[in-house]
Image (cartoon, rainbow, N blue to C red; front, side, top):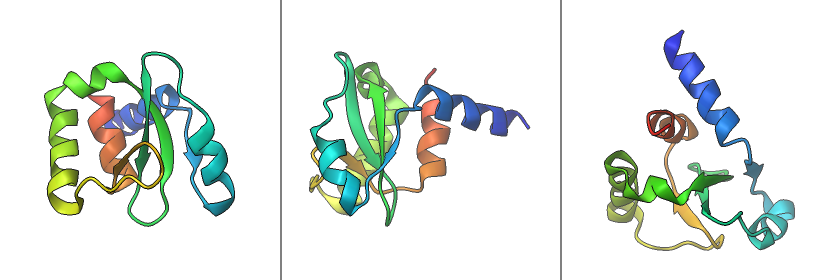
Length: 99
């Protein structure tokens, strides 16, 4: 139950998610995140766009997620923001601990 609340809380805070399909990827990529935030594309096959605070970049758990993505997939970011090819639930779990 607590995990579910954490996931819902993370989803609420990261509520600026957009499914990055072919029809919306151009619009999503062109929408600049607000000052102090950064766009992150998350997912294994279909990517979702999340706008997260740049303060996450200094958090060890978020850095570990980025490092793991880099090791496995390199630095290819075709969507214009950071691409983290992990399950969305994993991303939400990590970010729920950062709040």
